[in-house]
Image 1 (cartoon, rainbow, N blue to C red):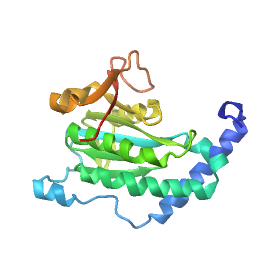
Image 2: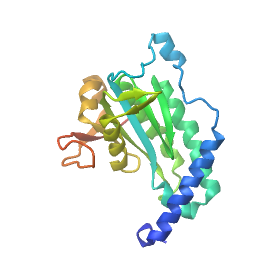
Image 3: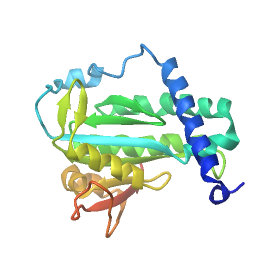
Length: 224
């Protein structure tokens, strides 16, 4: 059955099943660290942990698998869990490899934080590049990513505030396999990095909870 032919009840069933599978997957990870400590590379570079209660400039990344809930209906639970495990194995190490911190796992995706926008963008490009081979069929869920830099409030290792909402909305609006970034990110990464990327402006971007003047761009390119 084509996605557009599914009833509201079927879509609700898909969402429920997907949520259950995600819960099962996360239970497998119970007790595993969420990269709370600095990576060895970050330690060598002398980067220090952020302090709760301080709003410092942070680059936030949100990701998820586009179309995962609907795909589960036909794929079945075993294949869905296999995909979630593969996503974690492939994508999560790339966050730390680019000096980022995995803040938390969000269903079929992640929330991560970076000190530098260029590190966040490099991680996003690598995550899209390395997870694309996981999509072995035309309707297979593919990773999509939103990236924004701002000054979110940090509490107990998590982040809150307007900038978090903007990042989440960018991820929700991204097409499968796409990275959407705010103009603030592009303005901070440096022209040397932008030279190797394909950048397309998304005019008239509108999403609930985001400013009307938010500049949004789709970014793609080879991973350096």
